[in-house]
Image 1 (cartoon, helix red, strand yellow):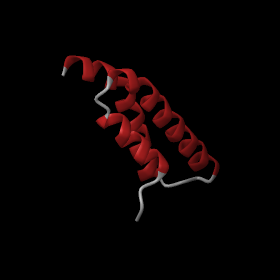
Image 2 (cartoon, helix red, strand yellow):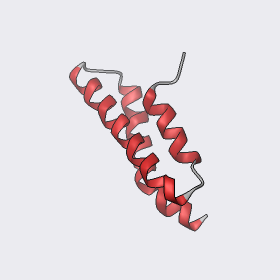
Image 3 (cartoon, helix red, strand yellow):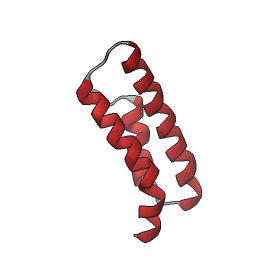
Image 4 (cartoon, one colour):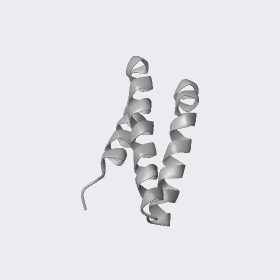
Length: 70
């Protein structure tokens, strides 16, 4: 099964090593995740995917601090 857009953008943010690009990668991933959450909420979507989205969104919020301390 091919990766969805939010997964591709999420992985790109996680693997970004350039601090100047990190913010835009994070924001793009957050937007894609929120769009997917909205779609799932509208269509009573898969709760397992919703949990994955919630975890990914949380990870993106903490990513800048984790990158700085690495």
